[in-house]
Image 1 (cartoon, rainbow, N blue to C red):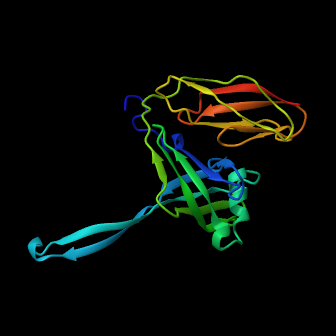
Image 2 (cartoon, helix red, strand yellow; image 1 turned 90 degrees about the vertical axis):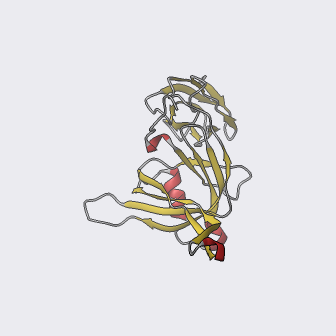
Length: 230
């Protein structure tokens, strides 16, 4: 790996599906207010001792439990955090959704998860409220290997237009081609338009606002465009 080498953890993009019962994924960026995302993977193992082992044990991994532990500061109005908060009183299948992770080399891991151990708010009087939760994959997630080796140098995105209640897929171009194309988005005025973590722009009301796209692997690489909703 020439350029991404020891990539900081923030260069990994994590997303949670906030509409698991919908026809399409509605990905939200698990990032604002979040200070730590760590794998909490574990193995299920069986141990055998055979006569030909000379007294040594033979360990066999029969299954895996994969997932993440997430923690940070409670940020009201954040799409991902507000969705997790809505699950606090849920049980059973209502805690099931989808999770996607994009690593700085472009490796994508995606699958169905259960959200558990949700903790929201609390602490010292003058401290920020906290948030923590875990997600565990319900089966082996799909994984697509990446081959990116460079940090982004520029990102380009043409000005966008969309009708009220319609959607369009934003397609930023990240250079060089050997850099991860993973981006996150922010709309200045969400009363005019909204955007999902994977770049689906939706018109809310007629007007014009600004949209900023940022490269996850190198957040200083950004582009701001005009968005028109008609």
